[in-house]
Structure formats: structure tokens, C-alpha cells
Image (cartoon, rainbow, N blue to C red; front, top):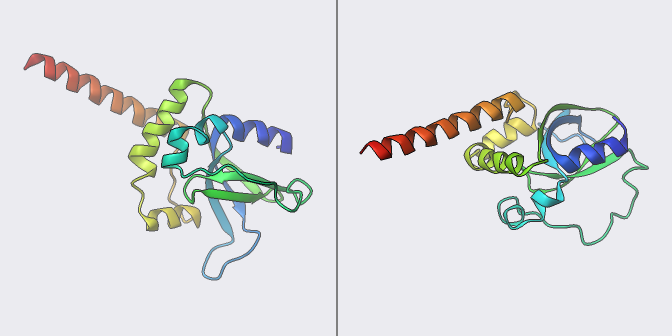
Length: 160
């Protein structure tokens, strides 16, 4: 996928991807998994600044990320900016953030699944050792189950 297409994808989605580590770390595998976005509406809102600890950049990096074949994005789990090596990466899944419903679905998923993750679960995911945060179908199923649970709770409340 071209650089400009990545800008568009990360600007309208949360993306789960894996990439070869640019700087190998002792005791870590060669692959790093990310859960990231560049959606300014999500990141720069009150919820993004509070829950994701988003900080807008204050100045550009001292190098051209594009010239180095790097893509800069906000890492949702680490809550900081990251550079992804575009020489060797793969997109696993995308979660759209195009509508108010999409964004609401993300925040609910964040509250129920991502936020409660332990440090060990986050490390397992980031080290690409099998922990998967989501699939698009899984998010939809999860949110549908939550909606059904709420509807049933409301119906039961009316019966009492």
C-alpha cells in the first residue's frame, strides 16, 4: 500500500498491524504489533486526550519519515507516537471510524476490551505472541451482544 493510501487509511480507521522492528530489542521477537490510528477527530477530542493520553505533535521530527520509508502514527496501547517500518509490515485488521456509530463502537470496545488489558496482555500483543485485540467481525459481534444485553435489561426493568 502506498504512503498516501496509508495516510488515508490511518486517518479514517483504527488499524491493527505488525511490522519488523527497526531496532531489535533483547528478549523480544523481531515483530512488533500495533493498534494505531491518525484519526484527528478521535485523538484530538476530549476522550482521546483523556483516555488515550493523546498529545498533538509540537514540531515535525528532525528527519523525513517518508524519505526513510517510515510511517508515523499514534500507538493506542503505548499511548505515544510510533514509526512503522514500511519495508516490512502487514495490516491484520481495520476498524472504521467514519461515522458517529463507528466512533461510538470504538469507544465502547476500548472501555470493555483495551482499557482493562493488563500490562502482560499488552506486552503479549505487542510482541506478536498470539494475543489478538480484535477482528472487525469480533467487534461487531461484541457490540451487538452488548446492545442485546442492554435491550434485555430494559425489557426486564419494564416487567418489574
